[in-house]
Length: 359
Ligand SMILES: Cc1ncc(COP(=O)(O)O)c(C=O)c1O
Image 1 (cartoon, rainbow, N blue to C red):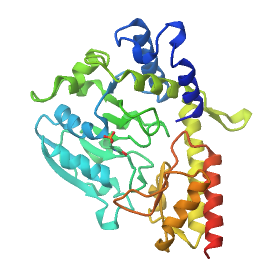
Image 2 (image 1 turned 90 degrees about the vertical axis):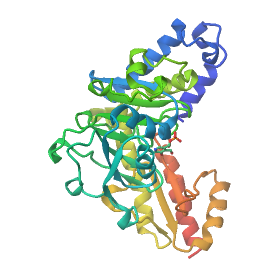
Image 3 (image 1 turned 90 degrees about the horizontal axis):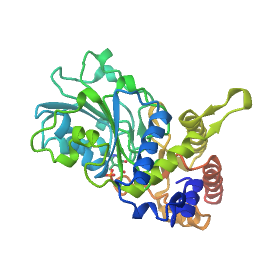
Image 4 (image 1 turned 180 degrees about the vertical axis):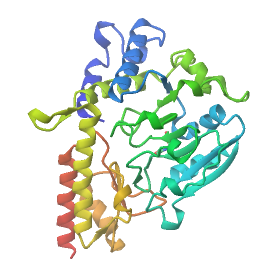
């Protein structure tokens, strides 16, 4: 979380804008909270240049619930194709099998999840109701640098992206997307709210068994207030959207703002870290250079017996949460939007010092 957002939330915690209430105490139908929610939606739309023919929904259940909610709404009980490029898309395809006929159109398993299968090689079925990709695989550190253009691949099926772990870190080309979903807890706000951006023509096809609270059309028609939404998480996400809109990068005559600025910063941060890893004798990242994640940088110590010492030394410097996901081991630096370049520089300094000491 950006520190400014936390500070603003702290200052407004007991009394939001003179209302005499904390946001937590407001009815979700009060004019105060409705204004918070409407501003959050409008700010996200502006920030991410979401076209008018997409709805922005604030839902609950996180990314994993969307693995069921998407097929419940889009599959019509028929078929869907999945590109499996890591742990999260693999989870998605497994869940979708409960609701429709799933085919794996492409996978990077043979490269041990270190590459992206080129879209031209995907085996897409003409009848598939949608094609799912995880645009940033958080655990494996594999990111699409460009979204696939399904129309150019000969299918009209909408592209569904799970952008949980890199939402708002770079612009999205909405002309290629039918639906995007992401839990807020990486780049937007606290856990509890799930953002769904869905093209209007995809609404209204939910299976009869789809819970009403998860039917996109019902959620959209009720402006994300069919049931009580996660009000505080929406409020904090809204503060983050405002923070993002005010971020800038570049010299006075070539300044970029908002998500374009975040992208520039994230490129600089990730290049600094990958460069240090690639130049070192001790650290290694095995992901192909064309699909390395700017957000999640998994790396390994060639001498794994030093892992605990590495983590302990990092902790003494305030470099936290570097232990890799339990399914892959090693280390992982999650350098989300709110991590400044200086934070990455501090990690690189530490890594170099550790390497020298243990050479
Ligand atoms: C890409 C991706 N998808 C889905 C999830 C699952 O999200 P949740 O825990 O919000 O259900 C995560 C969580 O880390 C993720 O990184």
